[in-house]
Length: 249
Image 1 (spheres, rainbow, N blue to C red):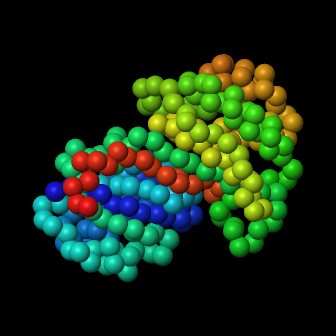
Image 2 (image 1 turned 120 degrees about the vertical axis):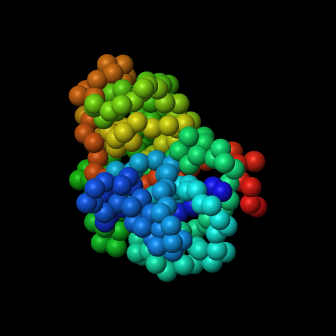
């Protein structure tokens, strides 16, 4: 039987989601916990591969098991895992469910602020200028007109295509923070952080709309802005067409 896990994590203490030899990762921590509690080796597949220090408030993974799970497994896992990982639900899904490939879209948010926020350390990136949010929203609208995001992709990856279909991109003031929300069917490695850095260049007056279009159309990572630090980035939503994929209601 195949099971889906709905979880969240603070990525500050982890070298990303994906298991890496000798390093603390969310996947390895969760696999070890499940293997101990279920008394069998468990391999987990996640909906994405967040980088070191990146957070997820909405994340899905799946694993296979020969038997029915204990109805108290969520409680047991949350008692066993460190407090920076939270399990919301574990439920049975169809055999063809795949946490990564069945996802229809993903939404990320990047948090910045020019204020010093002592109680939100590690949850945002501090900037030292007052950005023009309207200009950054105009730039986000330009971004929506394109599908090839090679200029924002990490170099030397095994991507078969750099085409992504954006359905949302905008900046909003949320309290003392400014939050960039971007939604697409898929994302390239490091794409959100490099897009954010480029749009912030617009917000500080270093880049205009013609310059942004030129960066995108060059299809050259070296032309784009800096990649923003990991701590401001959150995976906030992963969408599936559950329908028959979820066999346990």
